[in-house]
Image (cartoon, rainbow, N blue to C red; front, top):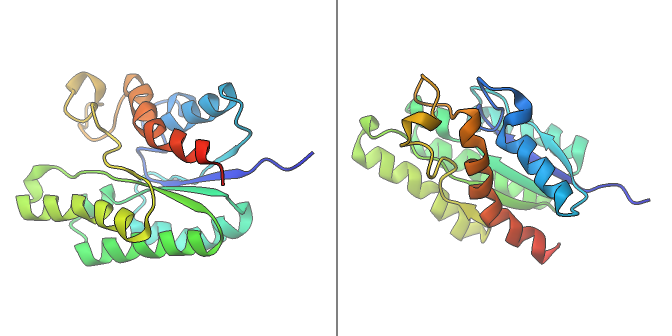
Length: 188
C-alpha cells in the first residue's frame, strides 16, 4: 500500500488550538473532514503558540525533510503583526517559506490574518496586503483571513479577544476548506 501523502501545517496558536482541547481545533476538524471525504492524508500540525514567521522559517526545512509533504499550509504572521515586526521581514520570511516548500515539490496554501486597527491604518493595510501580493507572485491559493466571521463576534472569541473558542473552530475550518477543497480536487 502506498504511503499516505503528508499535509504539513505551519501555524501559530490559532492553528495549535490555544486555550481549547486540541481535538476541537480547526486542524483536527480538517483531519476528520479529509477522512470523511475519502482523502488519505496524514495531517502534520507543526503549529506552535507564539510562533512568528521567523520561527516558522527556522523550523520549516527540518519539517520538510522529515515529513516530505505534498501540501503545506502556511498560517503565520499574526504574532509578527502584534509585535510590530517590520513588514519587509514578515514578507521575506513568508516568501522564503513558500519558496522552500515549492523547491521540495509541495503545493502551498497561504492563510492570511489581519491585525487589530490599533496598530495604525497604514500598517494594518500593508500587513494584510502582504498575503495577497505573495499569493499573486507565487500563484498559490490564498485564504484571505483565517478568522473571517469569527474575529468580530465576541461569543466566538476567548476572553483575551485574540484566540477563538471551540465554537469558532468549525467556522475556521469552513474558511480554509473553501480554498483547500479546490486544491484537493485538482489533485497534484
